[in-house]
Figure 1 (cartoon, rainbow, N blue to C red):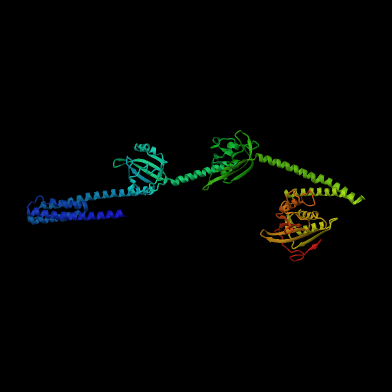
Figure 2: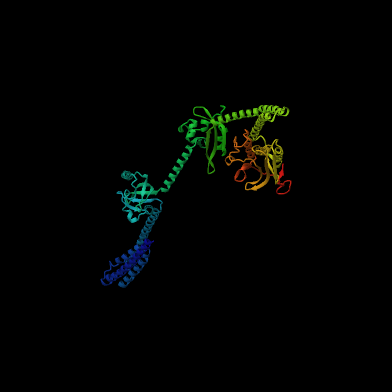
Length: 624
């Protein structure tokens, strides 16, 4: 803006000077004309003085010179008339010539002025373009001296226009990391007419900071002289993006190589575009042998029975056509050596901006897994055979032994000491039959043979309490308290849950035993559920045994040393009903005062929640 104001001031002063000069020349011309013509009496030369202001006016004021020429022509005619007393033809001719000269000079001056303005406008436009481009532009002479720069160069390098002429490419505008020694050879190639494009580590002289630059050198001619134009582009952002992409590519490659799954990519024609080392190892190929090849024809051309696998029927090919992913287990891929191996694979399309551009296939060699599954199936069949054998044949033999021993106790007249030797094996046979029964029930639960249905918890408890209320040779008291009827989703084995718990409470105690059974409906953060508690006054369970009590084959340090699966069966059944079971001290903090077993089962959704027979919140204690 200051430059523009300065130019306007100069133009204004120039216009004023021109006006003063022209007025002075006009006055001088008139005075000289009068002096030469009137005083000296010389007529032939005086009119030449008038051409001077006319030409100057034509140069400076263009068409306005015609007005001056007309005025001077009129003055010439008047002066001639005064001098001769008549208007002679030569006077008119001279006056006409004034006007003609003014017109010619004005026309030529206007043409020159228009041409000058066009050149000046073009120069201004070029300067605007020169300073508006994104790249820095540096004009060098053949010696490498900076002769001109654009505004972008000032901004990019942080220099002033005055300092730019003293800067050296090697010393000031480049970091030491660059191959400075190659600059002379590059310069010679450019001078020979070979354009040069290269990347360079540029340096800002202002603060010494560096940035990545792309430099383009080209020889140009200005006013017939050779110059070298350097175009410099800051590519720091691009280099950072490239480094980010390279880092991401390395990370993706690391991910591909860090899995034991085979991973490969295909284009829309089914040609392999990328494959990881796990896939190459399983298939037996090298990368060069598989990249760019049709994967279906290479590894999936036959089924495991040897029949052809058509490409149209292939899941991988279908995912490319339909855009839907698929997963297949039990198919085979074929190795380079022609041998198949069983795979589990998935194929999903790669979609970019709504267009399928390929697919990604992941696969795993499941040969060992399939073999292990077959071995597990064989072992399960063997176990089922043993369970059937134990459940039928062995149990039948137990029943025969139980029958004879029970008959011996009833018919033989023997002492109590002698009866002991009969009751002990009889008890062992009872336990053996119970164990067989529990194993069969566990098998039924784990194989989901017995479906769930709505079961009334109170009914199951009452049947169990009725059974254990009369134990031969043991004084047993069972108190039962119920607050509400509860319906849960269970099966006919629900009674076994409570039978095992109540039976253990009696079996693991000495002398008279009291068992308290309570049933209530509880609502908490997990919803509404049925809670059954079974308390006994037996020896209790140590804290270190509570966590392991329901584990398979775990036993506490109690009087009984059974071989059954009772509590493990309880836990398995309760969890199959989506409930939980745990044990705690009957008297909090004292594990020697008996224990409390807690069973919680979720209420069935269709349970109407009717109150128990007492129609009150608690029906009291009922001794059995």
